[in-house]
Image (cartoon, rainbow, N blue to C red; front, top):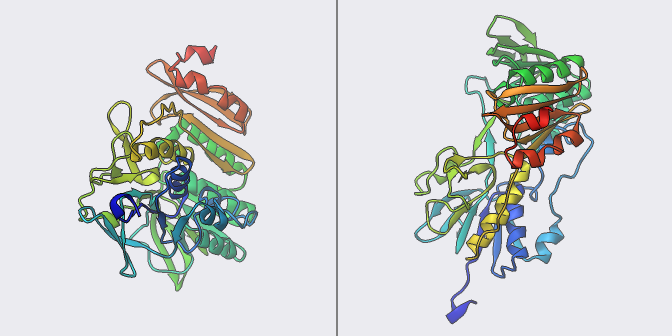
Length: 395
């Protein structure tokens, strides 16, 4: 019971991944003593998603749980699994779960992450896969044990990682991408070409500038027809065309959504006592623009800002240099800063497999991307943070 005998409803966190766990963890670190409840539509305890397209798919890692059950028990954090939230009443301050139960909240944190995009024109055939959950990753690995020919649709980070993992499992892979190179929209065509080179060296048939016209099969996928008329044998098709924020359940709630939950610069949503962080959240950046950042490392930084404000404290000063990575074969591709596809790209090292490139925007270093060069990537952090002139790294 709280003051004057009023029952404390506590903080309800909707979501079952990294953002939900980090938010709960930060609340307890900040010595918040009220109830904390995580409501997840997953049947597993919150787990790490990046390994799904890599270690888990290759069968090298079985357990990607972020925190053991004891962590939640010891910190008095209630975890409701298999419980999809279907609605929010921001006036009554309640959330409704699919089974009809209603939870009261003092503060609501939205941490539902992303859902993968699908291709509506694809038929309902066995063998067409979309990777987002642990169970799907395991099912894909089992399928790869008998599959001979896989077509990966989309050459973003997930598509590239899945292609690399399937090659490691001995499957013949064709990767299809409408853009001129893999990762063209994220890192530009120059670096995209180096990524394509890496995959081709490992035996992946990389088809760029072409899309999928049709998927054929009798019950199970058998063939993929490309937009240029090419027919590819396929007993597995993996759709990796990106994801969108998981916000459908917020329709008609009054919570503003525009490419994610619209938040201010500390994670406060448009409705009172509602917050959001992680991949689902569009935070206001330092320039006043809305930005949704899908970086694993971003989640902890947001939790460190959001939780103190939620508790009525001043947010800490956090200087963040965005960072993300992608493991493909034996090459870790690392991105530090905010490289963009239309930046000027300076490739300063390239041995035919590993590489290092600086991204220039308005005469300053905006980011660095390296393949297999972790030390050299990280050395650029201070230069990026200070907005140093590009000449200071090009020498």
